[in-house]
Amino acid sequence: MGFYEKMQKTSNRLLVSKGQAVVLKHTVVGEYVPGSGVETTVSTQYGTGAVVDWENQAIDGTIIRQGDRRLLLSALNTAGAALTAPAIEDTATVGGVTYTITQVKQTNPAGTVVLYDLNLRV
Image 1 (cartoon, rainbow, N blue to C red):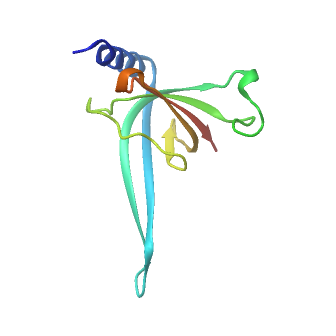
Image 2: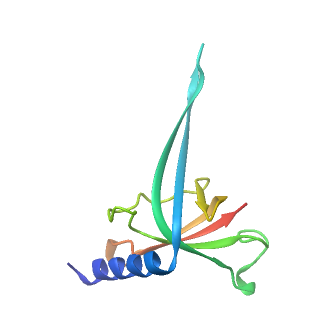
């Protein structure tokens, strides 16, 4: 196991011990099918993360707005496998609140995702 894989596991261990459960949903809207309507596919992932407030200097009013929250999300799902990268417009449910993901950043040194840094908006 390389250095960054160890960092990924350490990050996951810390978020599991100090964070909370996160349910991620990705919705794909299909084409209109006569007689059936629009078919929608929803994929669900289960992970772990920590929701924190943004620092005041980070709130610029456009990308990050007042009331947005920051989610530090493990790169591993609850089964310990790699999480599929969240995307803008996916939803994240944390602590019973469902947020829309408006920004996705990765800490990804040398091709190993260690952590996802997400902006959440109600």
